[in-house]
Image 1 (spheres, rainbow, N blue to C red):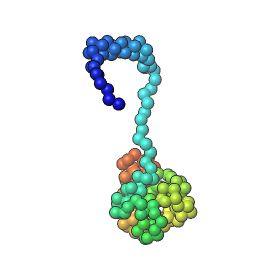
Image 2: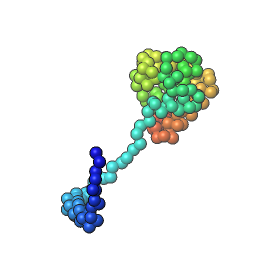
Image 3: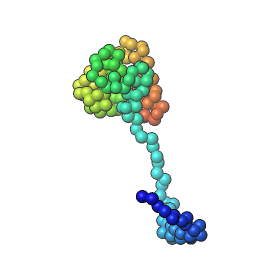
Image 4: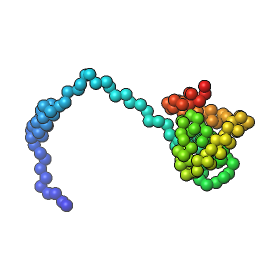
Length: 150
């Protein structure tokens, strides 16, 4: 559609309309109640997806590989780290972790947790990885990470 003969509105008319709107807004404004406490804004909780991303970065793996179907040792190791940190540091359930790790069954996540506990005791690199992930959770505001260290 082509608009022809468009005329610019008169600036005085625009000023009058703006002034009228401002007067209406002032007349119908709701006063702020001083007796109400201000709302405390908190950061959103850290999710398992963040832990998956951090683990992907730390281990140099693609997220799609971690959540995929491969049983390659390095991917199982990454999943074990994610499962352990998500349980200990975030307090997430086995089902929640399983859904985000490629829709895995909760018993698979339980197996990964047992594997992670074993690896933390005998593999210093794995223990360092999980400790770094817990540090990231703590820096991002995850409260349970501090409790996990106690």
